[in-house]
Structure formats: C-alpha cells, structure tokens
Amino acid sequence: MKHSTPSICLYFQVHQPYRLRDLRYSDIGQPDMQYFDEEKNRNIFQKVAEKCYLPTNALMQELVERYPHFSIAYSLSGVFLEQCEEYGPEVLESFQKLARTGKVEFLAETYYHSLSSLKSIEEFAQQVTAHVRRIHELFGQQPRIFRNTELIYSNELAHIARLMGFHGILAEGADHLLKNLNPNDPFVPPAFTLPLSVRNKIRKERPYPKAARSIDVLLKNYRLSDDVAFRFSDKKWIGYPLHADTFTDWLMQSGGRSVNLFMDYETFGEHQWADTGIFNFLRALPELWQERGIRAVTPSHAIREARGWKKQTYDAHTHVSWADTERDLSAWQENLIQKSALDELFKLEGAVRTANDPELMRRWRMLQTSDHFYYMCTKYWSDGDVHKYFSPYDSPYEAFRRFSHALCDLRQRIPQSQSQS
Image (cartoon, rainbow, N blue to C red; front, side, top):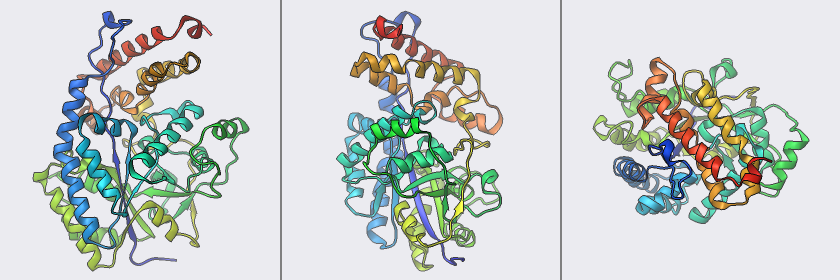
C-alpha cells in the first residue's frame, strides 16, 4: 500500500555537554577539584543560545501557531536542561512556551546523554527514568517515545524500551539494514526475548509500571536530513543552493508513510549560520507543505497513523547510530583510548553505588556523557573533520588526558573500603 503524500516527522536533538577543564596531575585529590570548565561552558551555551536556540524557538513558535498541520518534536538532554537553568533561563522559558502550544512533543532519552546502554542496564534505566520525570516537571508531558543517545539502537534496546513502557523508538535508517527498503515506511523490531537478568533489572527501575505491548521504530531518512543538517551551505554540493520548493519536491518523491527528518537543533544558526539562508528556508517550508497537503506530525502521531499498516522488520543484531559514515559505535569506541576510558569508568560503578554519596554519583554520571568519548576519536578524512569541528580540545589525546585525570580523581574520592571491594 502506497501513500502518495507522506507526512513529515521533524525531530530535533538539543544537547550541550559540560566540557572538561585543563586538569593537571597536581590537581588530582584536591578538596575543591572541579572537573568542568565553567567559563567555557557558559560562553558556548550563551553563544549558541543567541545564534540558535532563541531565534529558532521564536521562529518555531510562529510556525506552529500559524500553520494548523505543523508540529515538531524535541529531545532535550538533562545536562542541556541544567545548563538552561544555570546559563540561560530564557532558553528554557522559550521551550516551555512552545510546549504550551500543544503541538510540540518531548521525547525521552538518557539524562546525562550517556553511553550507559552499552555498559549497564541498571544505570541506563535509572537515567531514562530521571529524564522522564524531569520532562514532566518542566513541560507537563509524559514521554512515550524514546530516543537513545546519538540514536544508538539495536533489537535488544528496542525491547528494553518496550519493557520500560515506551510505544516508539527512533533509529537511524542504515542502508545495510534496510536492504533497499524505504526508511519512510513503518517498522517494528524482530521478536526478541530479553534475558531474565535484564528483565529483572528493568523492573526495579523504569519510568512506567507496565510494559508496552509492542513498539514501533521510526527510521531517520538520513539523506534528506543531512541535506539540511550538513550539506545546506556546501557550495560544492550538486544540490546547492537548496530551495524550500526543491526540498519539498524531494520529500514528496521519496514515498512511504512518514519522512522522518532527524537532526541536531544547532543546525539552525550554529552549524548553518543565519547568512546561509537557513532561517528563510525553514520559514518557507510549512506554507509550501500546507499548499501541497503535507502535514508535519509528531513521532507519536506518526506511529498512531501507522496503525493497521503492514510493518517491515528492522533487524539490528549489532548497534547502529547516526554518527559517521559507518553508522555504528566507532565514533565513541573505535580506538583503544576510547575503549579504555569507557571501560575504566564503568568498572567504578559498583564502588560508586556502594559509597552512597550523591556528589560522587553525579561526578561519575557526568563523565558518562558521550561527547567525552567522541572528542577522543582519531579518524581521518571527512569523519575526522567533523570530530575536530565539534571538539573543544587541540587533539584527541588532550581529550583523553583531561578525562583520565578526572577519572583518577574520581577513583581517589571513593572510600577505600568500596574501591577494594
């Protein structure tokens, strides 16, 4: 069954990490040792707020109020929300104003934008639960759609999310898994029985008391998403300059049920500067879509619309993500320093929990943020250039040095009895 005019599902990831300061070996163990660069984090947040968050939110507010069939979705990491409260309460207020329109959906993710799903189901479940509670506190919504950190996804993770009570999950439409299927079609994961040990851990800590009967998978159309997020201002690109009517033609020609455009929110004004025309491009889309009978829907709406449709199986035996050419875990776990950093961090989990110290737990969780490991990437060519663009450090080895010193300090803060257990 074909649908001549697909709907559009617009989802935006909003996240800022806490960047590590220049930690010296002599700092380790000092009573007032702080891991993060307060001044740099504040300056970056406020710069991006001025260029992206505030003007884009103002434009989105205008668009959702003007066009009846234009809705959007966000995932705001917990550490981003904390920075809103610390550095820019007006940014948080602008998201809350958007929430009050009733046309914006907020998704669940890991609170610390962490890689916990790769290492600890217990930690993962606790972070997701904390994030759901925070979204409800700030925006009055109970998220039922889950988006894992960096769109990391697998069959097992889909069923973990289902058992936690989520009805939908977002994932990358990876070519090697789609095998010529259309990412715009509705998908489900294959049947999968979670090990009893995993099920027991989830039941101890999850955001909703009942598991969902099934879970749908919304796949990112990465070609069309990346046309905006990465290629919009590239003068060497064959599609440059990209006009709203041309892009709308591509959307309509792509077929399927729902064209899922997932991207970083910083696309607007930060990665693609205002002088590229990105805001004019965004402003023009809803009117064109309205003229052509295209509706922009939330992920929950897209899933409801797919009820009764035949759904394809999206079979991800190994992890996929939305990062780099490989669309796997290599952006964070490709080299030895990345693997060592994450392994050593999670070796401390038992001791940190036993210590029952909220400040120690927070420090441990802050070091789980995926960006720390992303900055340690040593890839070359185009992927390497992207990593360099985002990194606040001179090299991957500087990122590792700062992380290692923070980790060493954290280890020393664990009471001796716990660290030896």
